[in-house]
Image (cartoon, rainbow, N blue to C red; front, side, top):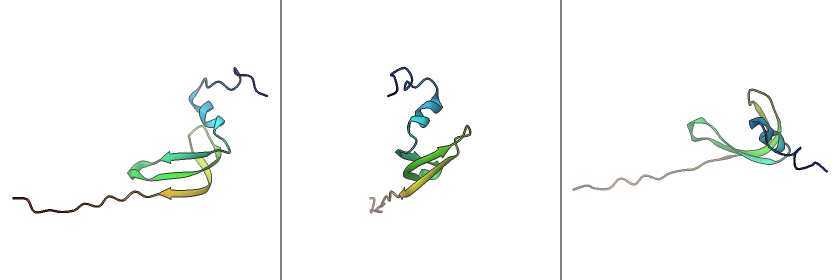
Length: 67
């Protein structure tokens, strides 16, 4: 069992390391969003996800008459 000190987040990439084999949510440019299981990553933050689903949000704009 890992001690509390070993599992503490000391650097930003440690948080990602703790998320390996967990489902994560990724927000990309152009308002794209992905959710999947984190399998791997590198120091450039390239990531490998499995069982991925893209989350699509649609906004309906209703044009009305303005007087």
